[in-house]
Every structure is written in C-alpha cells, then in structure tokens.
Amino acid sequence: MASFIAAQRADHGIPYAVSCRALGVSEGWFYKWKDGDRSPRRARRERLKAARALGADLAQLGAALAGRVQDAHGARTRTGLRVDQAAAALSALTDGRRVSVINAPAGSGSTWVLAAADRVWAAAGLGRVIGITPSQSARNTLAAGVPVSYNTAQFLGHLPGQRGVRGPVQLGPGDLVLMDEASMVSNPDLADVIGEAADSGAKVILAGDTQQLQAVESGGGLSLLADALGFVQLAEPVRFRAAWEQAASLRLRAGDATVLAEYDQHARIRGGDPEQMMDAAAADYVALTVDGTDVLLMAADHALRRELSRRIRDDLIRLGVVAAGLLFPVRLPSRHKESRYRKGSGPVAGQANRNQARPTGWPIPSTKPPS
Image (cartoon, rainbow, N blue to C red; front, side, top):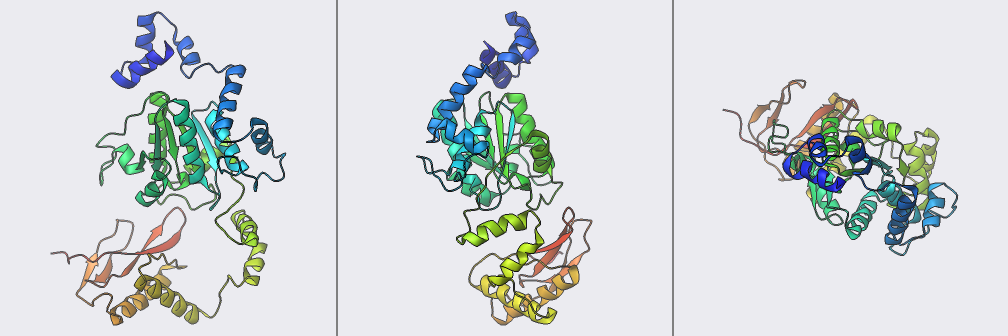
C-alpha cells in the first residue's frame, strides 16, 4: 500500500496526505514504510544481495569499510572491482539514506563504481537508474556504464538564461540517481536534483572529489554534504601508472607541500626565469593545439594571461592556423571588463573564477564583429 500511495504522488501529483486519508492510514505509517521494510534483518538481506552482485563477500566488504583489510586496495572482486570500490558501492547502495556521498580522489575510479551501482540496482529491479554529470563530455563517459545519463542542464530542463523552463526529467519511487563529478555541480543545480529526488522518493548517490576545484558558479555543495552526512572514500588513484605518483597525488591533494620534493626528483617540475617559462608555456600550447588537442593554460594573473594570449595568437597566425583580422570588442559578463579580439584569430580569453580567484583561459571561436 505504501508503494501505491507513493505512486499516486509520482504519477498523478496527489499529495501523500490526501491518499493516506482516502485509504484510512496515518501519514506516520506511510513514512515508516514507503521506503520498504528497514528492519535489521531486511537490511542485512539487502546487503548480502548487493555484495553478491558486486562479486564479493559481505564480511570482506565490511572489513574494508572498517579499515581492517590491509590489501583492500589491490584485491579484486569477481566482477573486477577493487575491494575498496565494491565496499564504497555497497555502503552507498544500502545505507538507507536519501543522499549518499562517495569521496573519490582523482583517478580512483568513481565512474566505474557508479556503473557497478547501476548494474546492482537494475538487477534488483528496484527502479530506473539515471546518471547526471555537470558537462556533456562527462555525460558521454558516464553513459558507457550508465546508459540513461544527462548533463545537469538537460536533466533540470535549463535553457540559456532560463533555469528549469523545460521542466526536469521525471523521477519515481525507487529510482536511483547517480551523479558523477558532483563537486563541479553548482549549488542551485545540486539542490534542485536532490529536491526532485526527495519529492519523488528516489535515491541519490553523489560521487566526486571534495578537494577538487569547485563549480565555476556557487560551489562547495558536495563538501558541505560530505561534512553533514559523512562519506565513504575510494582509496587508490589507479589512473597513475607509477606507484610513487599514486601515493604522491594523495599527499598533494591533502595539502602536504613537502611532497613537491618528490615530484622534483622525478623531473615533474620545470622551472626557469619568467621569460623562459612564458615562452615554454606558449610553445607547448601552440604545439598541442596544432596537434588537435584541447588545451587549458592557467596563469597567475591577468597581465600574464594577456601576454600569453598575445604570443599564442601571433604564433598561430604565423603558422596559418588562424587568420589575422579586424579587431572587435567581445562583451563578457558584467563583472568582467570588455576585451578586444581579432576576427578569425582564435584568441585565448580569460575569465576569473570568483570562487577560486584563479584566472583561467580557453579558446573562443571566431564570430562576426558586432554591427
């Protein structure tokens, strides 16, 4: 009966209170049972099923979550997950919370974990699984493991300058929302996604790195949720092939400046006088751009950014990659000064990230001069 009441809200917009009165049950009873039997025995059965679906023994995953397994990082389950990945998926899927957080350092395999969660949830027949990411490129990556995936604008129905004008993707009771790169999702979008899930009876799993740069808009939501709700953490950054770099990346992430000596020993830090380093940075940018690689070049301040932009543009013009053209103004958002670029020159523009106070740069496609 509880699932029927929940379905009336999701499918027909009938408030829970109205359905409860019509069926002669209290709202307290409904809220107790709408998410199913949460007795300890039922909860253990759910965890056993999830552990089997993840290819692991429940006791093994429990020990990993408690930090009692020394080789949890390197060991693999029958489905190919690392034990720490399977343990994180098990915790998030079965903790009984509306919102669960997986703290995933760069390269630790959060997307792989979310794909495993998709398989477990679908196999259990609990509801649909929907993936959400902050960008289209991240959505394309997630969709390889979570086929029904959207970027946040698509899911929430945004249009340029109009939030939610098309309406969000409809969720239902028992649906699972998997959000990857959640630290890069703006607070308004994060709140709207969680609100939609709460209203419809869906569950949300957020995966992201709380130490990563936050959203360009108002960010920090994932960190706040991790502090308030707690989190499980993936432990091994397997993206790095060298063992020393796996450990060093975690130390750097934690703000341990002494690890820079180790990077220097492995020739990962290049230094020189400012003029040499500007020439080297511009040359690398141009070489990668000509090779067809999208490049992000970060500078310490706007003066450096403007000089780097000039050198890069001039080099690209000399190579015939872009053409010199008419100088025309481009208006950035009101908090930024007007800049001037050359038509057809493929310039590099800068815009300050107000949350991080770090100038960034990216290519702006050529457009017609304003009339």
